[in-house]
Length: 209
Image 1 (cartoon, rainbow, N blue to C red):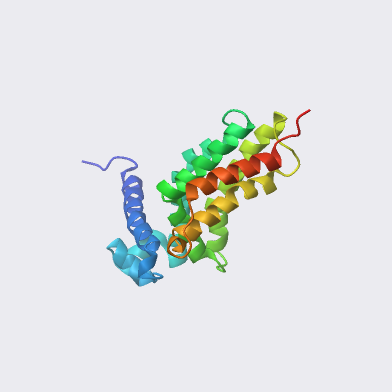
Image 2: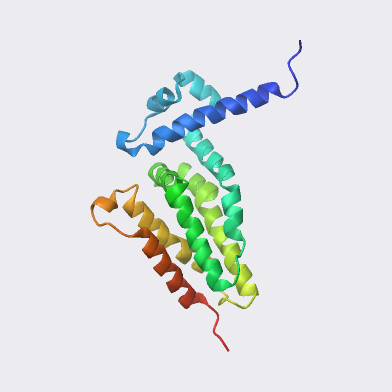
């Protein structure tokens, strides 16, 4: 019986997804230290030649992993981009949404991996920005721009405001979890998120008439 049209491509995509899942687990296990190309192949359960066949070089597999994370993040990013109620309600919801991704959906481990692999790297760093960091900033910008358009938020600097909304929570979660700061100086992340949201609302809400 002839092979159905498209089957090889589908089989290849499924195999790549399986390999990426195993590689993701190894890269996110920071207790094991940085992973070499050979160690990634071992974690994936394939030979170096097989891993090279599917992805190319080590840098290529890291970029493929980031692109895969971007695809998985499309729905959460879409939610972040949409305003939810009035300005204050929407900002509180945005902070809860981002905190949920970081604390419960593994986004903190994804970002930690991106930073570990990308800092100072000429191609992996930009891939991390374009696949993960920048889409998150742009989604927050879109939500904030909607509130500016409604007259609920001060205008003129939504990109700055988007970074200001994301960065403190991101730093706090990375400090506490991937970097082990919970053992050094514990922080109530729930209370921190609530305080951050209220501070942002006070700073950026449009002046009342």
